[in-house]
Length: 213
Image (cartoon, rainbow, N blue to C red; front, side, top):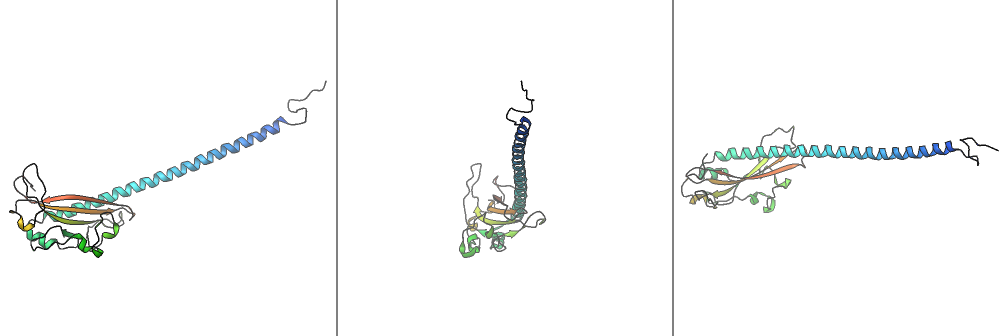
């Protein structure tokens, strides 16, 4: 009776050869899967780095905008009379929504090209003509921050339930009511396409529990 070895089939085929071929295919499949996973991880890491860099630049832009707000507030604290408003609010970053003592109002739109509407987050509207530049470290930002101030009027109310009323400066009822301003500031990150725009309402003045420095 003829016997076959455990490595030979009756038709002459080899178990070992076929097993080696299957192992090679499986190894190639595993290698392909590992390569795909590795590439995906690299892309994910790159995306996370970009997101972190963008978040940092957004934070830098916000700090720059806040510095511009602070600079504008420092200027406004020194304005304590209608005459000072009339002197300061003559365009180039300082505008008036109501008539100043000389009965002249300089709206922001008058300084924009063609009387266009000011759009706070539109980079092209922030120029030397329309806004005030603030000194800042340009090694961390693309451009120095800027601000625009608009005089709103006087707060003629008293007490806890205050309602802001837009009044002509001449009709101030005395100098015991606060002056109201709207400040709009912008700051950029190192990338000029990343910026932050902030807006605040600021009061200056004194008297009768309405506002105290």
